[in-house]
Amino acid sequence: MTNIILVGCNGRMGQMISSIVADDKDAVIVAGIDIVNNRENGYPVYQEFSGCKEEADVIVDFSSAKNLEKVVDFAVEKKIALVECSTGLSEEQTKYLLDAGKKTAVLRSANMSLGVNLLLKMVKEAAHKLASEGFDIEIVEKHHNQKLDAPSGTALALADSINEAMDNQYEYVYDRTQVRQKREKKELGISSVRGGTIVGEHDVIFAGNDEVVTFSHASHSRGVFAKGAVVAAKYLKGKDAGLYDMADVLM
Image 1: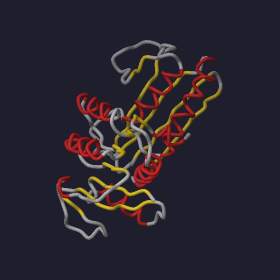
Image 2: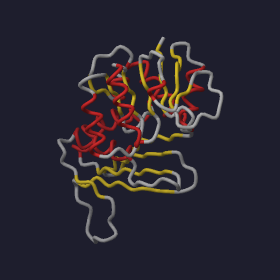
Image 3: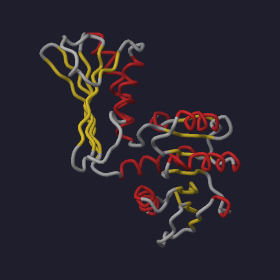
């Protein structure tokens, strides 16, 4: 049994995780941390870590990035593994999180979806086979009209996975409107679409002479990220101090 402390338990993602864990015979949420405590969760909820006395194997954090230092400090102090799912971390916060990996097990991924992380592995292998045969590579990502950043972190992670496989030969191109010239062979184009309520769609296109290979992933609800976080928490239980990602979970 994996005992979880859920940070941000009363937010949208927190409630999804609560629902998933309720049906999981191998995990249980022993406590939640949230500044808002206006619902019945079936487990105690605290506004501050100082009130939390429950023992846990793993912390799952789906709260705001502004809470990162508090979450990390608690995880390190109590020697509890941490699955960090907050987005929009600054460079300083990212370093803070990486330093914590020297003292406890820390897992962070650009996207918690199991499918996306499998896609990261697949496009790396495809790049070895296809890019070396002259295929051009383009990434198209689509998200809802409320998303602030572009391109998405997942699109960049896909690009980085491909570029790593190809010894970092590629230059990322986000906008071709200002340059009238043919596409360079070592370009990796990344395009963003924003509209409606699209949760998240990513297409990785390998375009060659007379054939196109496309790898696609679509998230139809945010539940895929919640499910991935729970799987990651069960994986991280009992792990030694260090830095982990979803690629480790899929091995």
